[in-house]
Amino acid sequence: MTAVRLDHTATLLDNGKVLVVGGSGDGTLASAELYNPSTGTFSATGSMTAARWDHTATLLGNGKVLVAGGIGSILHASAELYDPATGTFSSVGSMANGRSSHTATLLPNGKVLVAGGGGDSGFLASAELYDPSTGTFSATGSMTTARRDHTATLLGNGKVLVAGGSGELGTTSSAELYDPAAGTFSPTGRMGDARLSHTATLLDNGKVLVAGGEGRIGGILASAELYDPSTGTFSAAGNMAAVRQDHTATLLDNGKVLVVGGLGILIIHTSAELYDPSTGTFSAAGNMATARQDYTATSLPNNKVLVAGGIDDLRIHASAELYDPATTLGSNR
Image (cartoon, rainbow, N blue to C red; front, side):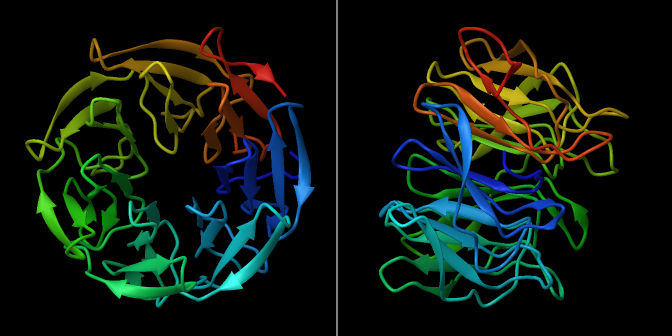
C-alpha cells in the first residue's frame, strides 16, 4: 500500500477495485487508496475530510461508500461519502453520537444500520439509520444491551443479528435481532461463550459462523459456534486449531470460510484455516508471509482474498498478500 495502516477499512467497489481508507499508521490517517486486482497494485485516491481509525465503511446501493465515525483528534460523529466516479470524499450528515468500534450494516431497503460502539460517555446501546436518499441519519430503536467490539450480520430474512461485544458488565454472550420493519431490537438465544473482537460470517445455508475472540476473563478463544435463524439458537461448531482475536473470516465461493491471522497467546498469527460447513470442521490453509492483527481481508471477484496492512510484534504494515483457494496464502503483492 502507499501507507502503513492498521484499524483501517477495505471495501470492494462495484468496479472490482478495493477502497482502503484511513486507519492508524504514521499518525491517524485521512488518506485512501485503491487496489486494482487486474494489475495487483495500489494507487492513491482522494483523501477523507477527516482523519479517522476504528471507523466503518459500507458500500451503498448507489455504488458510493459511507464512512462513519471512528477516532481522530476527536471521537467522530461525522460521516462522509466516497464517490468512485470522481475519486473524492464529501461530507454528509452527522450521527447523533460519536462512535468507534461500532457496526454498520446495509439493509435490504438501502439504508444503513449503525449500532452501538464506544461513545464519549461510555458504551452505547443507541442505533441510527443512514438514508442515502436524504444523506442524513435518524434514530431507530436502541439495542437491549450497550456494546462495542460486537458483530452485526444481515440474515437471509432481512433481520440483523448482533452478537457479543463488551459492555458495562464486561464481555457478553448475549445476542439480539434488529427488525427493519419494526425498527426495534429484541433478544435472541445466547452464545455458548462470551466474546468480543470475534468474527461472524453468514454461510450459504443461512446460518452464521461465530469464531474466536476474547472471552469473559480475558482469555482468547479457539471455539466456534453456529447461529440458526430458524430456531434462534447457537450451537457448538468445533474449535479452530489456534486461539484468535482481531482476526478475519471471509466466505469463499466454494462455501468454506477462510479464517486468517489475529492475536493468539504471546503471538500474532501467520496461520490460516478453513471452516467447512459440510463437515463442521476446521483444517489448515497455509500461512501468510507476514503475521497480522487489525488488518483487512476482502473477497475479490476472482475468488481470491486480499489481505492488507495490520500490525505484528514489531511494526505496522503497508504490505498486502493474496489468498488463492487453488493454492495457499503467502503470495506477496
